[in-house]
Image 1: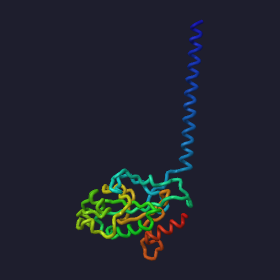
Image 2: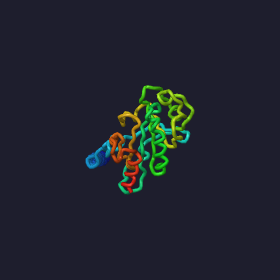
Image 3: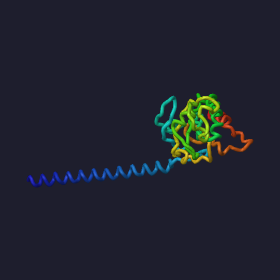
Image 4: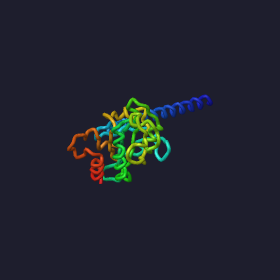
Length: 228
């Protein structure tokens, strides 16, 4: 009698185990099907720097207000933003502290920030593109107009550039990681991103005289009015 009970109990346990295994495989199959449907309906984002593409993420150290800190571009982005909703546009500048054209671009950046800095997030990415010496100290000196010999192809003190200090984040990209992801044609290079991170203006695509969006200020004003 006891043997019969043990056999019956063992059979019930086996049936329960089989039921759990079958449930596991059923749930796994359902989850796999859901993931496939989600991937099909929402394919991977088109990432790049052409207008209409999602700008690549930038993860690095940045300097602002006297401190270095962890920076991620996508922390400023609202991927669910839609046209007409409130949101903050992002103005990206790629520059090299030893680049003469970037030296000349510095006061223009200051003017842009003075006009739009309260409604547009400015970010400068300081790269080590030119074959000159680069350092974080040089980046900070360029940003803050500090006393440092080494800017402008290692031939000038950084405090000699025109304009005032730049009161927005400067990202350290001396290792060219972000530069290679964005692959700009040169520096300075500018992008305007909508609040969802989509490139809406690429300076390299508006370089011809007569283009109504040739100047960054015109591009910012146009896209801010379009999103209102």
